[in-house]
Length: 276
Image (cartoon, rainbow, N blue to C red):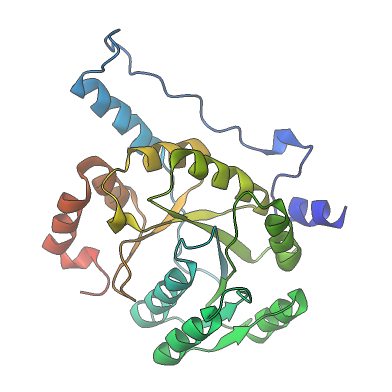
């Protein structure tokens, strides 16, 4: 019961209350006037792609008040690296005060990796082994502009993991869960991941490993169907360089034109890349 109350307070969907869950957009069939043959024409595909891209929404990470974000997601999607990139963007590029908190007590070396990044950026980093440790860390850093929580990754099919995260976050409405998903994930697993993490009240998506694939149609389609807004893009392993805020301009360019043209477009205008 306490878990259900906490989820409800966070604005998340509670099992048994299907009305609180967005059912997702209606299935996007062929554009009007499409041919009836099994193979759509290129202009039909282009119109369908524009419908998908036009339906995407975005989650702003700019600052009008303190932000507390928690990076959640499956194993190996790049949460710790993204935490460091986000911290560097806020601290070095935006001049904000930042703190890092690691909840990843399962993966060997995960906390050491985050501490190393924190030491380089000269920002505080704490380890939370229990929910009360997290609450105390957030209280200690309540005056920081941004607190980034790095969580442990597990299978999206492990329901106990989602329940555990809900207990850790409790009723603290400041925490914004950002779901990190790898662009290389299969269609079925993307859909399962979105469904699994929906009860946490996900505020935005981090699309990671965008440099490790050249096929973005499935990713675009699944993100549109999820109705989760996109927060930022991780375009490689480099910290802090391979990081971009999501916008209709950046995401649209990637999903329309593909990786090579997207990178050329970024390099042609250094203002689009925070670290140039």
